[in-house]
Image 1 (tube, rainbow over the protein chains, first blue to last red):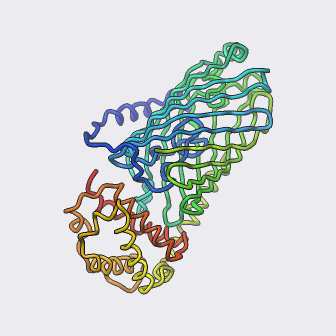
Image 2 (cartoon, rainbow over the protein chains, first blue to last red):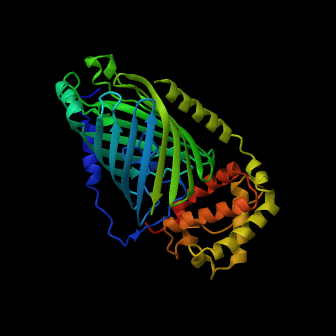
Image 3 (tube, helix red, strand yellow):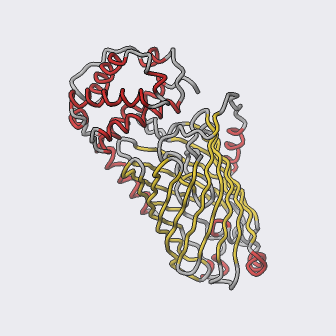
Length: 294
Length: 141
């Protein structure tokens, strides 16, 4: 594993230097097909529930500007997460997102709530995940998530003790392909990250300061035009395990069903398996997310 | 962790082998020629009723377009037809068509297929053969 994803960073910098096309843009565009803007991931980027996809958020297609807002709640045996945020999609090419997470960590530290703010940027490089159905070439995108966590005083002192930083940047590359004839959507994301529990427990540690490349996979099957059923897997670093078995970190998994009754709204229901979270193993539970689009 | 990638690979293989069973199965699933004629009649009615697509078709020779579409889809679906129509790029060159308009037409076609009782999986197989035409038809970036 490289300590810092320099090639990825360079590719991202070069791609963002592409000249923008100057043209009239329609706001509130709904030119994409149903569900092809994905849902809102917990980090705010468009994709599945736990992982971003290469698609650009909102229903805005070329020549359009669109927006989404989401509210997500996940509860496990001992913890709960509330997340909300907004995203803009421009020209089916550029996505900007902002998300706020509040993680109720009372089971580990009484009264503690971990608050994380995530600003996201995603740029489509090439391909059309939906319409290029005669080729195996996926839609490709690069993204960045700028994260800052406010852990509160008690958890903050623990993070200081293991030298976990309060801010971090995840960089990722995603490839998304809809096998249209089969109604099957595949996504693979490779994320360079230092985040502990997605950033809720800071970034890196005294023992693991470097970036790690972690794979994330989603498979979704379109049952109907407006319903998708899928599974996701998201590998994560394990930077805090040296501090004891309680801090061991597992991959995240989920099984989800997303329903879009119309282009203005979608609802995603999932069962998530978040593994060990600070002394509470086998955390799993329900996940519900509402997305509104305009 | 390696279990899920293995699942993805096996799904891909399953899908790839499914696509190989081409023949005229899709053409038959669409109701052969009578089914396509009915479908295109319904499709044109809906295209003219939808404000997003109506401007592209209201001044056109609708009977001619319907007949051409029947031949074209018949051939694409593996039926016993030969589409002798014009080049897709040339025939759309005089009209500004952006991706939103192209997708609007796809949505209208989905509604027509639903109305004809065509199974969702059949719909997707047809759309998969039509969708790549966006490269010839969409001419406004």
